[in-house]
Amino acid sequence: MAESKGKVLLVAFYNIKAQGVRYLETALESAGYDVSCVFYKDFNSVRPKKTTEAELDLLCGRIEQVQPLFIGLSVMSSMYLDTVNAVLERIKQRFDIPVLCGGAFTSMFPEYFLDRGAQFVIRTDGEHAIVRLADALRTGSDYSGIPSLGWRDGSGSHVNAIGDVLTQLDGYGAPVINSRGACFIENDKLVEGDPQLGTMSYETIASRGCPFQCSYCCCSNLRKLLPQGTPPVRFRSVKSVIDELIEAKKQCRKLVFIHFYDEVFPRKKDWVDEFVAEYKKHIHMPFTIWTHPGMVDEETLRKLVSVGLMEVIMGIQSGSPYIRREVFHRRETQEDIIEATRAISDAGVFWASYDFMLQHPFEKIEHLKETYYLVKQLHGRYELQLHGLNFLPGTDIVPKAIEEGYFTPEEMDAIMYAPMDEQFGAYWKRENSEESRLWYELTYLLQYKDLRPLAEKYESDPLAHAAEIDAAYAKGKKKEKNRYLYKKSRIALKRVLF
Image 1: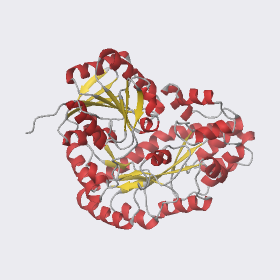
Image 2 (image 1 turned 180 degrees about the vertical axis):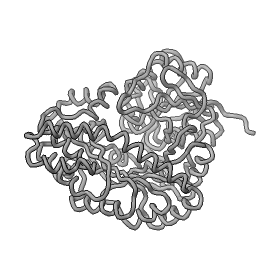
Image 3 (image 1 turned 30 degrees about the vertical axis):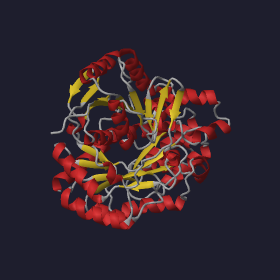
């Protein structure tokens, strides 16, 4: 067995599955480094909790134990920056160890962490850059020529152009499933071992990138950072994906469900045909995918259903053509959306979940009404995920909201960089005006067979029937838990039948 080149400690925030960190672990271990991963707190969008002093002390204890060459922090979102900043500040106070930040947020705003004491940042794909940096730090050699790297020294900040990015993703290997040196810090406790091993649902991706340009999402702007000629969506081979899932089945003994977290699940016919054959042969587990109204194909869905596709999640976001086109930069028509839901239903998909972002500053009552009347036309059985709009740094909707006078730059910064409980609270908060609330509730009722007639009964004059609509909405909210349990039980049964 080759001698280790040294130790590296990686920290994933609010995500025990954290595929990005697990890919970096693969890269570093393949290059001869020992990696210890800390999965720092679990995700909870309803009651998010920032870090505590006890948890910071536990992390410091782990750092003292490992004595790493450097510490890598994966910062995918601005939603939990208060915790990341607390971790970074504590590391600076306690240790003289270089800190490296990466992830989507870091890729767009490298100076943010360089200004707060991180010695290094890596933008976009980090697999090659992190190994080259580790080698440079180990040997004391020059790192200034590493593509995608940023750093701070006595002369200031430096950020290199992004490069050394693979178009064929198999070259990065597969993410580590059982992180051998891992621990989980949550609720003021440190638990040894990889928390993913006890999961019932495994998350993976078959591709990186998104072909669309939604204004509320950073994907399109991350794509612009990549070297010219990089495809907007890059794919893994079917073999790479299946090999990963075979290993996941071995390591995660409670596994009953696979979740593909691609922005849009691959639709290329040859890829899908090979995937269907190999998935049926080796995996035979129920799974879910994300899609887009412009990418739904009934024939493809039928093939996927035949080998275990149980749920399709699709973002619709608004029933208003104006909001979708002019605000969200989405080009699909009402007819496209309705046809996509028909295809999902006719393909035999057991469960459809449709996302909507409602009651934001751009939306007026007429737009909410358009959403209600579009939802009335959706096909099949479906679940509605109704929530608000979060303004996230690096998205095109932020300058649009400022230009149109909804917020000043200072107000927008206060929103985007608010504590996590405020940000998630805004995500789930509902508009207080009575008419807006009632149209939101009427839309919500349409997903329930027994409550839908009430929505249709009161849609002509909701203000005159506010008490009845509120009561029906409360009844619907009570049904959510039973519906969730029904969905999970059917998935579990499907796993047994496989």
